[in-house]
Length: 377
Ligand SMILES: Cc1cc2nc3c(=O)[nH]c(=O)nc-3n(C[C@H](O)[C@H](O)[C@H](O)COP(=O)(O)OP(=O)(O)OC[C@H]3O[C@@H](n4cnc5c(N)ncnc54)[C@H](O)[C@@H]3O)c2cc1C
Image (cartoon, rainbow, N blue to C red; front, side, top):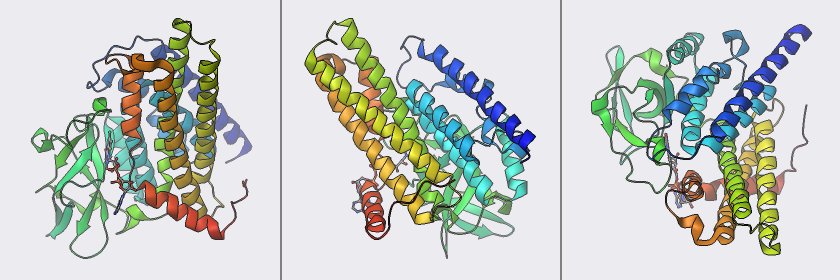
């Protein structure tokens, strides 16, 4: 990029940040009222109108490269954090959408990248539905096309998503990534059961059985979905959303203690201090994880190990924060219909991410033999 292009790029990012901050302030000021199982359509539309979805694409595709450059990555971090504050459920769906854009940019052909961009321009939300139902989704060749079979068991935004990136297992070989249409209402299924939190994410299931897809819908090569560092690195975005949930809880804690004139108690102050330390600790981990995810010079294992540790550090900080909030507010934090009660349930549910034991021990096994990498350019 030339110096002039670089400065126009930085300016574009700054303008985007300012618009994002306006949206955040406006939505933060709204009263907490929506039924908790209602998908946040209005916030989704507001995000679209302020250009958040277009900004994900590369500069060549008239975006702001939020999925490509490290400067863009820092802006994406703030976007995910702010949306996590406003709605963890929408944060989950936004994160899925970003993941699809990122995977198609990394592994898709030029034609596929262009096709996805056109598809997403038309107000479509993308989902990443990789968690299988009782058995894995399979894919079989059928003449010039392919046929899918099976159910994806955790499908966030099942009613809103119109295209999903799914994994499907061929008869021989490793899983393939497939971009499949998801607009057939007859194929929607109830999902994993009533979750105690994250109900607004509209998490259902989707039956792909019998769906025919063309070779152009297959993204990348067999095994690409699990290819490192991308497979583990993407977890930093979920941590950024969870961090937004922590920010929200801390605000709710401070507000209620002030309202009830309890904030001056030395015991409450000690807990507020502890809560702020947890928030800042989580924020520092997320920043480090985002930097690692966009690093051009770090070893793949360094990237995945840092991000695995970061996601566990954020999980731990958030769980400790929930305990502190419950201790500080007492029974008042357990009253249904209050924001603090719902955010705690949403956050606790959101924090259930796959294979945490493996993430910890794999990172530990790497750093037993390797030093922490220097922060690079
Ligand atoms: C609100 C919500 C929305 C979601 N939306 C989507 C979506 O749109 N798309 C999608 O694909 N998925 C989605 N998911 C699923 C999500 O990505 C994870 O698959 C899920 O949250 C994993 O959580 P878990 O606690 O069951 O993980 P697990 O990995 O089952 O972990 C549970 C515990 O078991 C341990 N463990 C894991 N594997 C083993 C093993 N082999 N042997 C022994 N112990 C083991 C873990 O370390 C951990 O201690 C969603 C989940 C939620 C909560």
